[in-house]
Image (tube, rainbow over all chains, first blue to last red; front, side, top):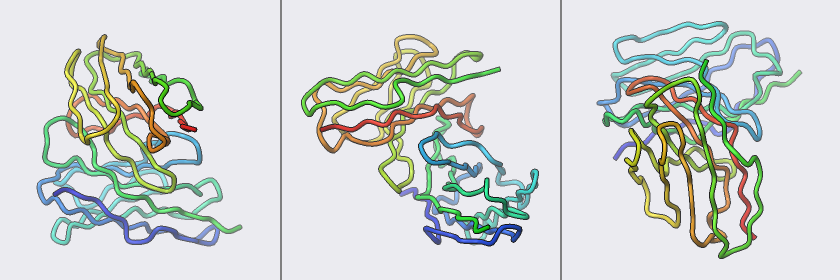
Length: 113
Length: 112
């Protein structure tokens, strides 16, 4: 079956350091991946996405890397700030045509001042 | 621009009572609509999705149902709530396959 998992439930980093959050997926047919940020009590917010024809995509302070060989996805946050503290979810499109996303369990990012 | 509205933000309901959560989307037509549930400290579990009016697909067997009476309206219901229905319910929409989903602010449901 399809599943998305995260390697670590909690990541603690010092303010100003870079953060790397990892995610493994199981469906080799997935061709679209997204990272979301969820602050306490709020709905997830889109951060960045990547399609399977790419292996890297950059946004503002964030980079997503996709390794299809080992079915691994990572989110890199440069110069982590206190406002980056949240739960981060990876999601994959799966093999359906409905647009539904399959989410991982989330990694809590804690930024220490 | 597109917006998604979900209400209420919090809800406390007794066991056995009915439930109706509503979600509406503005600024787009024929969206794909989704209901997710999130248990405390966990990821998002897809409950229902809809690709059109009256078209509902259920992902997991449960005590809940969904309806889409209008193109941009998605309703999550239950006839009799169970304690295990407590959770954070999120509505979302997307344009089509392989695009990001946009989430509402969620409803915190506590069944007592």
